[in-house]
Amino acid sequence: MKSRSREGNTRFRLVLTLGLAVVLPALALIVVSFQHVKSIQRNKKVEAIIHRDFQYVLSTSAKKISSKAVELADQARACFPSENDSDDEKRKKFELLLQNSPWVSQVVLFDARKGVVFESQPGSMSEKEITDANKMYSGWLGLEGSFLVGQMRKKNKPMTWFSGESVTPNGPVYVTTAVFSMPEASGEHPILGVVSFDSKYLKEKFFPELLTELTSQKFSGDPGGDEQALHELSPQESEHQDERLAIEVYPADAQKGEPDRPLAVSPGWSGGKPEVNYTLDDPFRGLALGIRFQGTTAEAIGRRFVVQSFLILGVLSLLMIGGLVLTYRSVNKQVALARLKSDFVSNVSHELRTPLALIRLYAETLELGRINTAEKKNEYYSIIRKESERLTALINNILDFSRIEAGAKEYDFRETDIAELVRTTLDSYRFQIEQQGFALEEQIDPGIPAVTVDREAIARALVNLVNNALKYSDSEKFLAVRLYRDKSLLKLEVSDRGIGIERHEQTRIFDKFYRTCDPLVHNTKGSGLGLSLVRHITHAHGGNVEVESTPGRGSKFTLSLPLAQQPGSA
Ligand code: ADP
Image 1 (cartoon, rainbow, N blue to C red):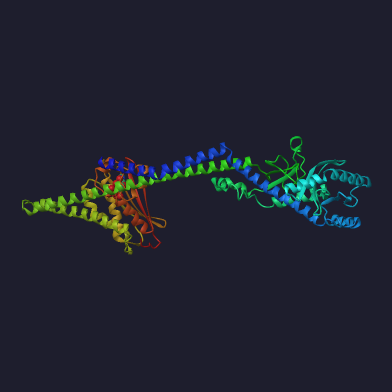
Image 2: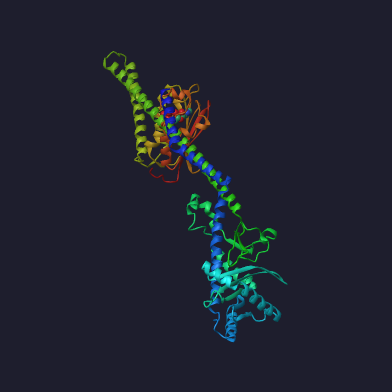
């Protein structure tokens, strides 16, 4: 009773330690992670981070687009004629400029004193349109030229831009025009240069090429910006960085009325609404950029992340529960083994003490010379011999067991007449068997060939099985030993009609220290080592041991040893 409660305490302490040291922290971690993922789901954090990154990508893209346009305008400006050139020279320079700059649709040099020199791409305008354009420029710049120069000086900007949609017979087109003051210009006599971008070039080349370049790399988020926020999330939460982007350019004011009229789109833009917009400033005032992922949305990525995280947490929880169950079972096993060991020590001490006490008692009685009859004396001698044999058998079992445990057990295999070995072993026990009231049925088939075995070990296995049959029989005292050949196997069977063994215990009885729960077993002396030795011995001979048993009806143990195969040493 005491040992059971100590065992319970040990188990409780182990489970408590396990709970406090491992399970609680792991559980807390899982719960906190679960809450974290829940809050990410609730506050749409993944989407928010993606949208913020989108905003960053669009702002840098807008900067690149505008600096590219300014660069082109600067290139054109560098090729402008000077005010001192003759009108012919000016035209020639303009023609060359237009020829080399396909992005330019019109160029104008306005000199307040000398008037307007206008040139457009050859064949792009009718005579009338050219005359109208000339008039328009001289009227507009004549009126506002000085003001424009003053404005540019004031703002310290070399250029000013006029952009927007203009309606043509083919529908609305987007144009942008750079106006800059020439170095010779003064406040009273402004000299201005004008470069108009070709709307077709913008739509078909300028924007598509830039957008392709801008979306050619995988999305890498905001490197210089709010990195802290990015790192708040785990690597999977930033997994959107592997997605490809698609960007469109569209008229900013058309967005409300007609959202699906992009001016240009990057490859992979499959229509639909952009997730984030960015309104462009000069030189493309009136346009906006829109961004989204190719083939997915920030919401889908957020959803995927949440599902993945929950799955991972689920798997982790299952692993933890699995680990817990395994640990609990192994703790139970260890505790049970510790109990078996302590039972073993008390069983063995008891087993040693009883024969020793008997030997001592009978030896002392004989010594005192009080026994007179030879018959009585013989009885006492035989008791002393039997008890010392029992002691020897027990000590041999223990020694064998300790050798096996240390891996030092060696077998001495020799060619043996096993029928003779079984017979002589039984003969030395016959008296004891019969004295205990057992009917012994011995059946040894003739013509059993010689086998290579360790005589002593096989005899010990047989003695252990016979002893068990004697110990674990109550009402019906019957013991049968059979030796026969079954194909290539030699079978040694020991059966009894004793208490039998429950089915669930039939494999465990071969474990060291194991004894069944039957009350008769507990009232019988034993160490729980016999069958584990029997199993070890048969395995060492390349054989096997099996049990068939019905509780209350008896048991049959069968050793199978191979006839042909030479056994190996264990
Ligand atoms: P021990 O007999 O010293 O307890 P063993 O290893 O020989 O140890 O046997 C292990 C257990 O198997 C026994 O305690 C008993 O419960 C059970 N057992 C062995 N042989 C028999 C048998 N012939 N009939 C019923 N139970 C048996």
